[in-house]
Image (tube, rainbow, N blue to C red; front, side):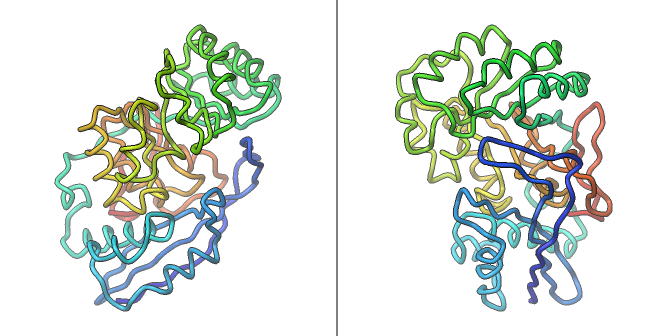
Length: 321
């Protein structure tokens, strides 16, 4: 078995800004696993929040042994971007070998389209209102917040897109006091979900707090090992393959979270259709799907995912799985 990893850059359609900074391109790692003439593909996005770089993740992948199974991979690498790309490439490889789709191998129903959120970049209230107006036809908008001026931005987006469902991602940018102060306004403005309002290390403040809008764990939830610490703090978990370390753990986390009474959101980093493709399987029936990475790009993979008014569709076999 031969594994290769390549750093690639895809231009964004517009500057994308969150509370941690701005970017004009998506930098990803593409993994190719070849075995007996069959090739599987995967993609990951190293995330500085978890001390990952293109170089460190490449080194992890290149340090793998010559041959291993997908089950063995779970113990060879920790959860994170490196394992994600390799895990998804192995799913693709297995599907091609078997002449089946990945969802068949996973014992899942045939997937269909899922309505996905579209993320509005963090900007001034006036510019965010203009963004919202431009995308007011979309049924679900996600707003990046986490600054002292969040209320004005939220009001502006609601003016720009009065009919859209709104979810908010604070990116760990609020305190418990700020969240408590904003909560009634979130209800008033019809916000359906608040993602990671407090820093992951300080989220015990959510225990016993009134949560009139469901609160979703993002940075506080990586894989099944995260679940015990979420009790009493969160209502929803955000499953991202770059956090779980691939589709294998993502499916297991989804099942475990649902069994424990959480609702599920399926999210993404800013990547291409290759990164989103396996996540579409996890997103089936989710409370919130947030797989808009390709919609933010000026360029994408060949055979990209299909998006229309029904949402994001499962991948063609020529892309993945």
